[in-house]
Image 1 (cartoon, rainbow, N blue to C red):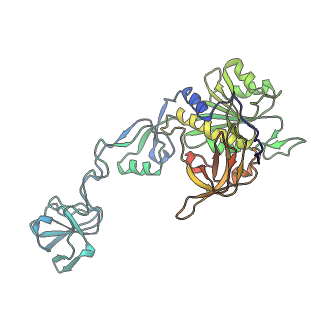
Image 2: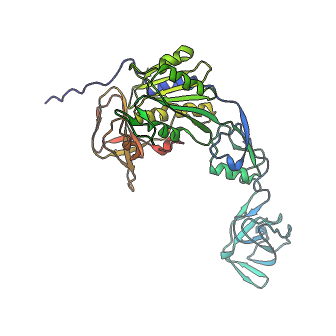
Image 3: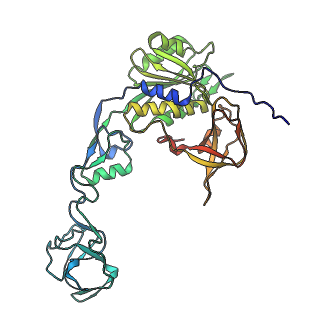
Length: 417
């Protein structure tokens, strides 16, 4: 029996996701302005240049255990206990043959000692110590510079500073760092059908969800969002909005980028800048406007449906902003393979991202299922999800039990989805 033909969803004029990302990144000029910030305020900021260690860490040989420091080559198991070295209160720096020193974790090891035996492996009788289990030479001694040596590369330039980076900086006595200045991104929605979240919608109107969604998705410690509100569907209103965004590095709008009568973004921008409407071979999120204003600002016009806006922001806007910051993270992000629970359907011709819930299974591949209806206006499908299920451009879906590629939201780096 012949299978029914699946209608193709392709468009010969559509651009692949990879090609669109490459074109966008090629058009980006990284910001070069710097500022100095306290390490306490540096989380999430982009380090301007390679940072090298100004000191050895640790600066002295230190004990890795509570125990006793001694010279391994003295032989025998018995030692004379002649003092102690405590963390922050070092003892004598020399030891005579056959002597040992009580020592605590992090305390300085005497120059004459080369080994520390942990306290559980000794018996102390008065001033005599007997080693019940002899450690290997050098055991439990942290060498100078074993964490990082002087002038070693600590953190490469372009790194988004995280909690561990700030700990490393503090351990090396560094209290300020040079970072790329913050980006300013102007954000607005277009459409007469939109009202603010606190307002009562009129006939045929809806609350604007996109600005709240995109503000959270794009803004962070290194990116300030200027919320320009809702722009009415007139060329003059759009021109005023663009004028209000003159101090921004990049502009992001949602809605008004298709071919409708009220879609003025391309016309107004195109009069003074360079803008193009692309069809992207993906679902949701086919239409994408990209270009620059007359004063050189990067512009993104995202689709109006909230799920489409979110996905295009993740795949195109976020990588572009990272490139503007000089961040080392590229467009690639982590994916996993999972077993599909249930079946998925699509038309060939576009890469499709369905919202899903990924769960781990002990001793097996993780499993994933969709959040239900996948229309691009259904925002709760995104809110209930923790991943995207990617269906390839030529596929007609996937069957229950098949392996599928999954993009966990955590794999998008700074995505708070």
